[in-house]
Each structure stands twice: as structure tokens, then as C-alpha cells.
Image (cartoon, rainbow, N blue to C red; front, side, top):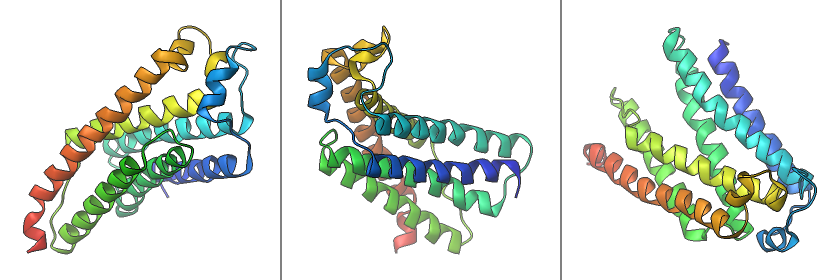
Length: 208
């Protein structure tokens, strides 16, 4: 197994750490974090949320490195083509499911994101069976970036809230924090719909 594939497998391991931390640990609600106000500088409100946050950040960063290294050094493999998008989808979908469960993301948004991911995965599988390829487009990459930004902003809020250093504190609690999360959320929704429609139009011949 080459280095890019090892990084991808490591990203799958961060998903395990992420889910276990949130399942086992105690995480305060968003309202409780807002009400708590500032405390010790950069001291987490929740150890579980802190572990989940940095596991998610590690997974998001690894998403860039495995693809970059694979293309730069000619290490693209069939295993990598399978695992890389799969790891991305599991990481993002796990975070959105959790954030919907704690009330930080509308349930229908998570359903929309899951539907888009299953649709694109299905179309890519049909294309592969016909010897074709549906490559990721620029809109899809921006969509993923905004989704990751939203998840990180929410997890940062739950982990640190008002204990974050300036200016991160204003991007975590109060009006600034709400604006930041809404920007990432609705931007990702817009690009999720746009990207999903684009893939559906590109792959409509596969459904005939």
C-alpha cells in the first residue's frame, strides 16, 4: 500500500475516533455553550467535542494530501480511487448526521447531502461499468470545502465556545458565530444542489 492510500486509510481511522468521541463523551448543547460565556483561555467546554473536532480537522487536512501526493508522484491506484471518495463521504456524512441530532443543522439539509452523495456515487458506478468516468468538478470541490468549513465551525463552537482566543471567539459565539456557521451551511446547500444537478445532467444517459 503506497503513501497516499495509507493517508486515506488514516482518514477512515479519524472517522472512528470522531464517532466514538461523540458517542461516549458528554457534549454540551449549543445553547449551553452560548450561555456559559468566556472562561479559561482556550480551555475546552467538552473534552469529547475537542477530540472530535481535531479528529475531524485531521481527516479534512488528509483529504488534500493524499490526492495531491497521488497525482504529483503518479501513485494513483484503483484502491485509492475507491477509498478516497468513500472516506470523504463517510467523514462529512457522519458529521452532518451528528450535527442534525444535536440541532445545529436542519434535518432536511443532512438528507439532501446524503441524497446527493448516493446519487453521485451511483452514477459513477454506472459510468465505471460502461468504461466511462464522471470526474469531480470545480463546484463539487467548493461544495466539499464549505461542508467541511461548516462542520469545523460547529464542532469548534461545541468544543471551545467563548473560551476561544480572539478573534476566533467572535466566530464561535454570538452573532459572529451564527453568521459564520450560516455562511458555510447555506453556501454548502446551494453548491450541493448545483453540483447534484450538474452530475445528474452529465450522467442522465446512464439512466436510460
